[in-house]
Amino acid sequence: MTMIRDTAQRRAIRKVFLDADRPLSPEEILTGAQRIVPNLGMATVYRSVKSLVEEEWLVAVDMPGESQRYEQAGKAHHHHFNCRTCGRVYDFDGCPTGMDELVPPGFVMDDHEIYLYGTCASCK
Image (tube, rainbow, N blue to C red; front, side, top):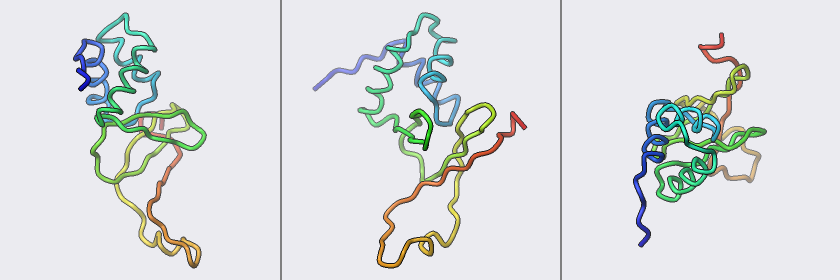
């Protein structure tokens, strides 16, 4: 069994996710965590994120045409809004009804993702 070290860097990265409560890019993680641990580097962010994904504390969020982001695991089904002005990604709850009607005849849908794009409240 591998022992997971609880370092100041890992605690800072967890705090960044808890405070943000939205999907974050590695660059956003670095910027936020450096406010707590100024000498934190990108390599440490990548190693910590990899470990937190393996521990199932984080999950990857794949956005079409965007770099991968990460968010806390265990959230209920939700979708994402990408602000075209600031580049931040936000969670939103809910699904449109009638999704099954979009599936071609003879096909079976087992999952879906919805991405909305526009301007967030801060950039508006």
